[in-house]
Length: 245
Image 1: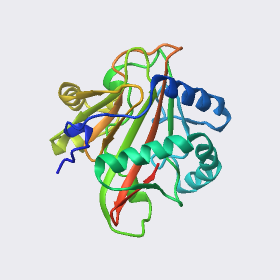
Image 2: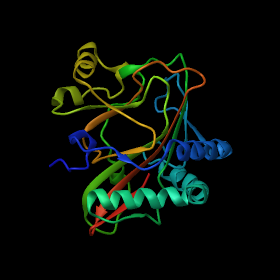
Image 3: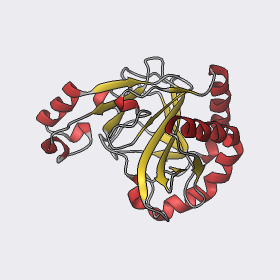
């Protein structure tokens, strides 16, 4: 059942930060560039991006632990106030308190620099997927629900957001998840049926992670463009959201 806070079910974006507060955070994140980790979500993607923090879907178990140990203190230092704001908003909008997990990576940042070689639209955003990072970790209690969060701090001039799909036929999900590897029939189906959720700076979006979705840049990006967002996941255990990335 779709939750009232789920953006894919019509839930509202949650205004958390002003433009100036976002700009200050982006400046701080850029100043921590020595702690960024370069990423290629797909080996043959032309567009490199970075994370500040560990990410379950990108790191092997050993690399995840190492990166989290190195980056968690940095994130706690620069995001203490932000984490309080985010956890309070999640509690208010879902009805369950939210805490940061002690044993996993803290919510971290995606950082994309603009690249006019990168195609906009469906080809830009890496894999078409569902979020199931909780399946790679151990939690002490039964998982009652899951949650994914995105808080955009800066977006390209042409916009940013997510594509999502509901009621995807099983044969469309059985093939490659990367658009540039899909058959023409599979690509055409996803391209024709995509729905776009637009991001606004300072407005957090929540969803359960289990709707098929993809990072989206609807237009081309230039070298001066920057896309920065706080990203995280949550599991509801014993009535409390445990947040991680």
